[in-house]
Length: 602
Image (cartoon, rainbow, N blue to C red; front, top):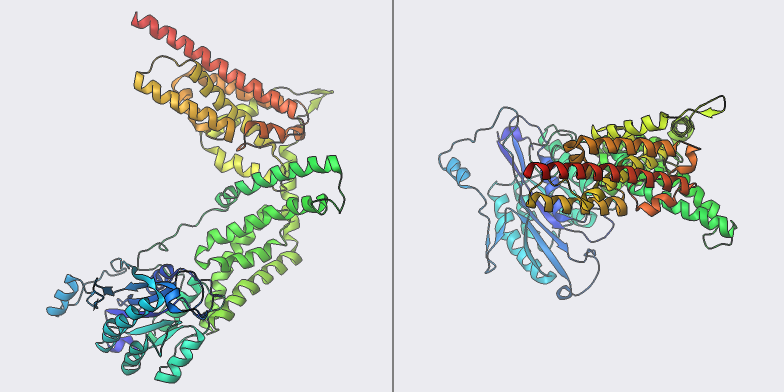
C-alpha cells in the first residue's frame, strides 16, 4: 500500500487483541502498550501526513495469567480497554469519535491545516470500557468489534491493523473479514492468532510479525510501526522525536553523576552490612561452616561486586527506561566483569543503554522475529560488552584510578621534623562548609564520597560531611529551640520553632536536612561565624591523627555514624565539640539579639 496514491493527510491505525495466551511476554500493562504504539506512530515521517492510533480494543486478564490457562470464563475477571470506542450504560455501542471540527471539515470538504514541521499534539485517551467476568467482557468486545472497528474499516476510516494475540475466529472475526475485504496491511504478535489470520482470511502479514515470548512493550511497538512504515514506504526510526505528546515525549537524559548519586541507598546499606560482618568475624572467626557460609566470601562479594552491579543496572535503566527489564538483563551480565569499580559500571550501563536500542532496531529492520530480537538484544549485547571489558582491562585501569583518589583523600597530614602541620584540617572544614552553601556538595563532594565508598567502606569525606554540615545544623537548631533571638513576631516564632524542631530531629536521627540552618546563618553573621568555626575545629580533630581510622558517613542516625568508625571515640569527640561550638555561638548570638531588642522596646 502506497499512501501517496490516496494523498492522505491522516492515516488511521486500529489495534485489536488481548494480553495473550502465555505469560512469557514482558509487556503486562495494556494502557502503556497502547500509548507506546501511538507514540511510535508519531515518529513516522511522510511529508505532512499524520499517523495516529485511532481505534483500539485490548482485553487484559485481571490476575495477569495467560488466556491459555483453562478456567471457566465466569470465574475469571478481565478489563477491556478502548480507544475511539464507547459503550453506553445499556450496552449499546457507538463509533462516533470525530470531533466537531473534523465533522465540519468533512462537510465543507476543507482539508485541515498543518504546521510546516510538526503537527498539533495528538492526545490519546485509553478508556477502561468494562471490568467484569471474562464472558461478559467478551460479549461487549464482540459487539464493539462488529459495530465500531469492522464498520470503520469497511467505510475506509482505517488504513492498517495491528493484531496482538487476537481471536480471529471468535470475537474479532468481523474485524478481520473487513480487513481482508479492504485489503489493508496487518502486523502484530501472537503466533497462533497470526497463523489463523493468514490462513483463514488470506491476509498478508507485514514486517516481522510473530511470537511475543520475552518481548517488551517498546519492542512490540517499534516492531509494529516499523512493519507498517515499510508498507507505507515512509521513513521511521525509534530515535526520531515523536509528533505526539505523551509520557514518553522529550525525555531528558540524566548525567552519570546524578545516576551515581541515585545509588546512595545501596552504598549506605552495604557499608553498614560490612561493618556488622567485620564485628561478627572478629568475635566468632571466619570458617566455612558458620551461619553465613564463610564470612570472608560474603564480604568479598559485597566489597567487589554488589555496588558495581547496582550502578550498572541503574545506569542502563536510567538511560533506556523504555526497554524495561530487557535492558536490565545485559546490564546484569556486563556488571559481573566490573568488579571493584563503580565508574566502570556506570560507563558500562551507559554503553548498554545505547547498544540495546540500536541492536534492537537493526534486528527489526532485518525482519528478525521479536522473540529472537530480544534474545539477541538482552543476551548478545551483555555477552559482547562483558567480553570486551574482560579483554581490554579497562576495569583494572578504573580500579587503579579510584584507588589513587581514595589514597589522596585519606592521606594523613604532612609532618615537618616529626611535628604535624596544624590548621590544614581547619581550613578544609571551612571550605567544605562554604562549598556546600554555594552548590558544590552534589557537584563535587557527594561524588567523591561515593567513590570512596565504592568498596563498601565508609568515607573520610562522609565523616567531614556529617561533622561540618549535619552536626553544625543540629547545633544551630538546638540553640534556637533553647532561646530564639526575640526579633520575630509570634507567628514567625512558631514557624521557626517548628522548623528547628524538625531540623534537629532529622539531622540527629537521619543525618540530613542541613539546609534548615542556612536562613539563620544568613540572617545573623555571628551564627554564620560560629558555624564556620565549628566546621573548622571539628575537621581539624578528624585530621589530627590517622584519617583512615575515622571513616564514616552522613545520612545515618548519629550513633550509627559514630559506630562505623574504627576510632569512634575521636570521631565522637569531633562531633561533640562541633555541636558545642555551633550551639554556644548561636545561643550567645540569640541572647545578644534578644537583649538589644528588649533595650529598643523599652
